[in-house]
Image (cartoon, rainbow, N blue to C red; front, side, top):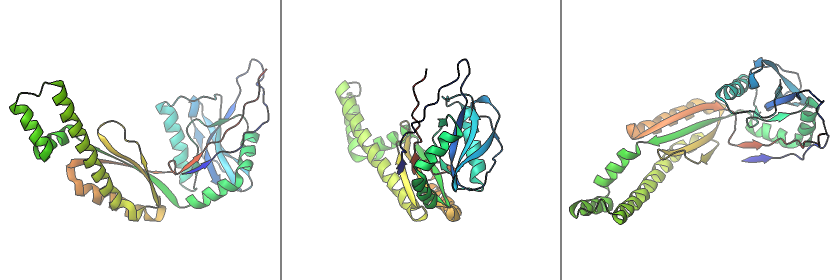
Length: 273
């Protein structure tokens, strides 16, 4: 992952007494010398124009906002996503994390200037590329039942517990649970390896994120060439068909490269009187 953290800006801005300070919500950075509009955004519950703030041939995509801290509500998340989708129709965008807010356009220009060369490099690397997400889940209870029938060691131990009426003892349950957890982890790792093997040739890079909950065995992001989107889609379908109803595949995208670029734009807030 490319991690860009600019030096903090030092200019101090003090809010005027009795007024709520206006800010700029930043969606991402694109390559453009000309001013560009992307409709309007409802982020933060307001309806503001989405415009660009420039430094040279790069620009931040922003809208005005009356607030500085955003709750990740569904409405705010959808508003953020809507702007990103609009930009992606014609531009490669380096996305900012949700809730990135600056005080003024000048503050944004100052930060763009401070990491200009790094942003140019990232934009060059990400041009023509898209991110897709893939989450894979299984029916854990069904898999456990199969292991108790088909896994030799677990099957023998389970039969022994049943024969000796030991299912209810604490230590017997603990031992059986550890055996099942180990077998589940090994099986999940094998499945994930097979899935990656089936997709590796059609992607530029991949990132394995932590699965969510006990039913998810894979939570991955893939960076692909836009020109190979159809190939990647076909490869995902082929892998999914291989596992049939044993695994459930949730395939999302295209997204900007959230998982492959981490740009944290920071602005030091001056002392407030």
